[in-house]
Image (cartoon, rainbow, N blue to C red; front, top):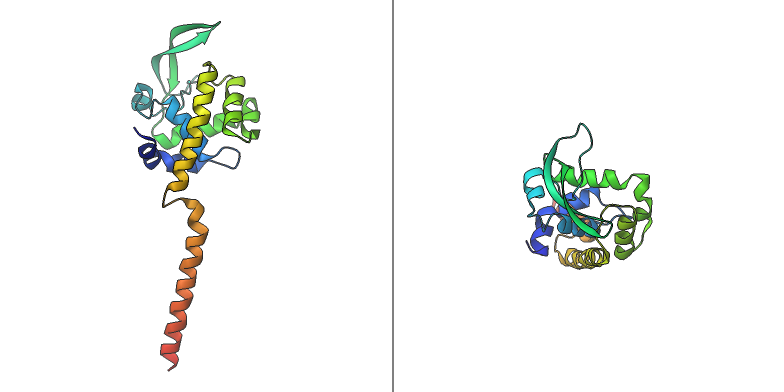
Length: 179
């Protein structure tokens, strides 16, 4: 799936859980990378966009994953959290990052810093290439989001224009009524 298609499909989920400290572009980039562009088996079978592992009592699917342990890539079966829909996966991601363990991720001011802090907090075991890819993807998502015609950053301008047009119309109508 292309970046543009991914944004069209999942931007609302990312925007719903984004904040000043965790922008939608970063959330989309991380989910894009973790979910194999939204096409991984984990995403298809469990609506899990972030590779979140299940805790006791949570719905799950068991799948093999590659973990890097002591510099070695090892395939292990793991229980991954299963979600009813994409929105719940994105909400869970925010909940997870709200844990004090990820405090520095939310304090970071750049995509690269966020990616480094995710690694430092143990979110993933991949190396520097993953960190750099995540940061670059977040920057690309950010640029693509800014190009979108329905970008919510334009909402205040649209609202002002809409209200102005209502005032103009109401003034015209009141002149017609008063004549």
